[in-house]
Length: 187
Image 1 (spheres, rainbow, N blue to C red):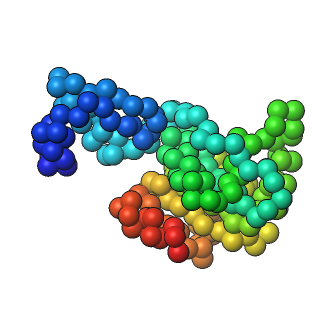
Image 2: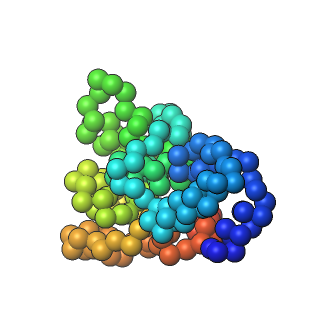
Image 3: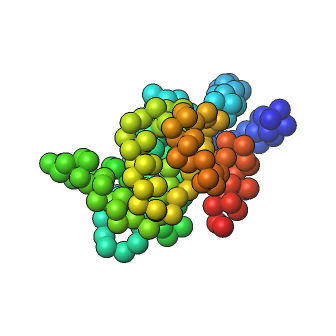
């Protein structure tokens, strides 16, 4: 990390793209060190559980095969960039931002889960505390859906989830470099 800061300071960049907030940040000589320190802290603890990001795209609503994603809304700052990456790679993604106003939330979620081709759950301490995420996991397992668990943070599974998900291969994203994670997801 110190080498990265020296390189950034030597380049004297005028702006940078913050991937979490999806905004361009103007950088000048004085704030550069502050910005670098902020970035370092973000990567030490990349998820602010109270930060809510904007949905990256409209959720899929057609009849073709699609991926259902389950996550805690408090994790949207880390989940939305992943969903956006999947979407840009041509995958059809359903997530609960696609529920039209006036529709019953449990009905829409259950219908989408029953129709999905693949179930992806983003595991974090917040998601394993969510009754909705636990219900979606149980529904997907009961329906024998193809299942991928992506651990975005080191998380001890509650005993009931450990029992249900014990035999399911998990991707420990929090332990991997981005390149290794991308190769794992490509498989």
